[in-house]
Image 1 (cartoon, rainbow, N blue to C red):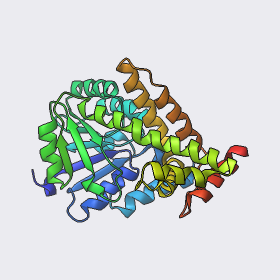
Image 2 (image 1 turned 90 degrees about the horizontal axis):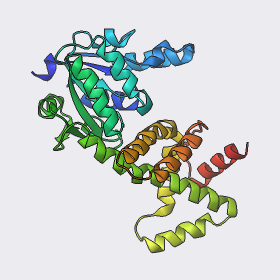
Image 3 (image 1 turned 120 degrees about the vertical axis):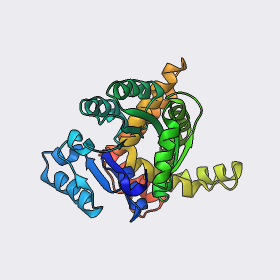
Amino acid sequence: MTIKQQAVAFLGFGEAAMAFIKGWETNRPATIKAFDIKTNDPDVAIRDGKNADYQKLNVLGAVSDAVAMADTDAVFSLVTADQAALVAKNAAGSFPKGAFFFDCNSCAPGTKRRNADIIEAAGGRYVDVAVMAPVYPKLHKTPLLLSGPHAEAGLAYLAALDMAPAIVEGDIGAGSSIKMIRSIMMKGMEALFAECVLAGRKAGVEEAVLASLDKTYPGFDFPAKAGYMLERAMTHGIRRAAEMEEVALTVHELGLANEMAKATVQWQRRIGNMKLNAGDLEYQDRADMILKALEG
């Protein structure tokens, strides 16, 4: 199947979905449809904003997941981690037979296996997909790890879209295990930076602390990383908290204590819920915004 014959649907039309489509540019599937629950939001501004996203990228916005998936050969599930199981369950009711279900959500391996059972029972071909980096700046070339019995066929499909898939040996959950366990460190560092920088800022010693850390780990550039880590939590904290819930579940299912993952959930959610605009600011200004919100 060539790219011009492909018909794809997106369930969830946020940053990742839009990044993939931007990357495809003119070399895109013949049909791209999408459904996002924001188009059913009672807030008119939210509905209009999402419909504007569809129009901007020349995507057919659907009134339901069933309408979006009709007559497609691949479905990309790209929602927040806490919605991934519900999306799979709802999709199964009208899933196109033989179509791929690319589960790109940041979920625990156990969640992915349960989603796979549902989609496979509905006649779909489930592929566990782990998105292994931020979708900007690489867009559709963001590294993807695929696992499960349909991984090879899924790789061929995604390769035709000029994407960057690779196969992880093992059954469903193998790719997600890598993603989830990696997130203990990556999202955990954001939480650690938040607690360290905010405490240091409040005590008036954060510059000395970061300078000391730079001496211990030369080349890491702790002040620059502080700004980046705070921006990530401010911009994506709610989504990251949902992912870290799945990370905590992953660790628990492995029979290990998961206190670090749970603590990361709390910091990510706390900062994300503030809905602050990180802007193009230095870490000090971002830290002050968070501290002001905490004290308010």
